Image (cartoon, rainbow, N blue to C red; front, side, top):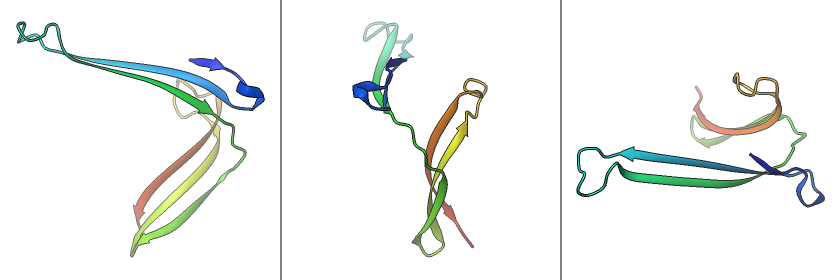
Length: 96
């Protein structure tokens, strides 16, 4: 959820996210029931617009390469298909 748009007079937006996962433990009511474990994962993100686009590949070891890619475009799923976004990705690949 977006908390602040253009925070601190900058182009940065502040977002808050929260994930909670609980694992059932129905077999041992003496130790803990109904949940054996619950994980709470709050997060705060600063999102800055990037006006860059391109990719860069570099050698890591013999035929193993790394790459970084910057992309400006639209979302890649039905949830955000019409939302413009900037994405940065990194990876490793094996080249011949």
